[in-house]
Picture 1 (cartoon, rainbow, N blue to C red):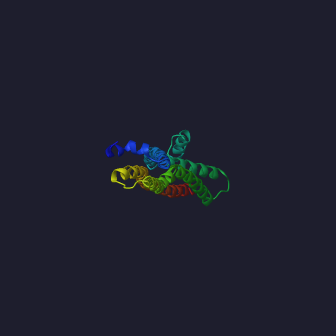
Picture 2 (picture 1 turned 90 degrees about the vertical axis):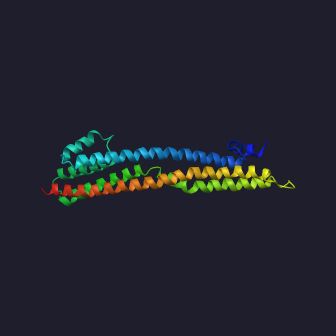
Picture 3 (picture 1 turned 180 degrees about the vertical axis):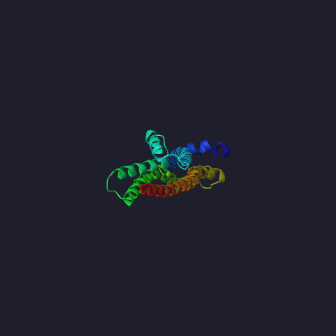
Length: 226
């Protein structure tokens, strides 16, 4: 077998030591899960942004709050995060307003607490799997490096009984070890890029939700004093 044949990628993987193979399999599995979450989160954030835009247009167009609330209740399983926040706040406000002796501050504070609780649940849903992407981006290179170091140790150990080592003898062992680092980087780089991008997008959505909660609380306060 020639040196060129020895350095073919599939040959390198097949000839790698057991530990290096396990590292490669682990990194490929992590990479697969990472890409799965990347595409899943891409569509989830895009949908959340579109639903938020749609609801804000409806809300600020001057539609009746009761009509908006009834529409949210009727389509509870298909509405977006901001509309769920609105539904929770208006439902609590309506309940408190129907009770005798409830002052304005109590009504608004109750609505704000209900919106805050729903906001936390929605943010938890949007941020799901981001921790996995962050862990993949930070840990995968080191796992790949571990496989590389182990593979190089294995390659040099095999040369212990050789009187004169040549490049042809050393190159395949080192190359197969470096494949682990390459796979680690292949898993880490997309995960880091996706994590940074999605964190930014989710933070922007969070700002929009928080601004809406404050503005809606002011609207409820003005409505309560009428």
